[in-house]
Amino acid sequence: MARVTIEGSLSPSVELARGVRRTVTVTDHIRRLVAGGFVIVVDGSLDDDPEPVAEVEPPAGNATTEEWLQFLRDQDVEVPVGDDGETPGREALKALWASRVDGGS
Image 1 (tube, rainbow, N blue to C red):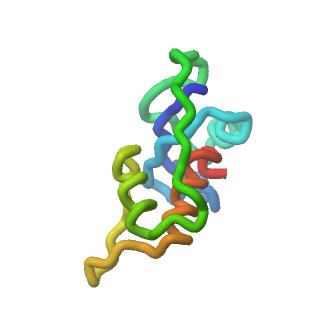
Image 2: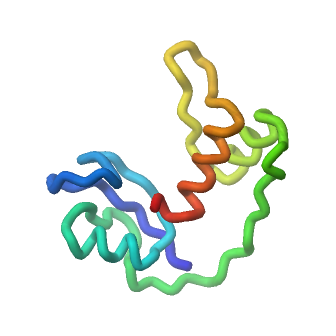
């Protein structure tokens, strides 16, 4: 499926705060957000039909936090780091991956 980078618009939305960007898979949900003016496409196109991308298999749900962290880094997913320099725990990393795969919905 096509991927686009969207940005939260001036219209209030619980999906994405104004000015925040996220790269997502184009879904009907994303198309509705764009059509409603809640997000704008800043890179890519909703109509692009790129070459198929191989499915990526994430680590097992009970994999270590370090395995999840390495997997996300290998997928070029930006992992937030707290003020104390700590990375999120395993459940938060799994949720971060799920948000990417589900297109943020």
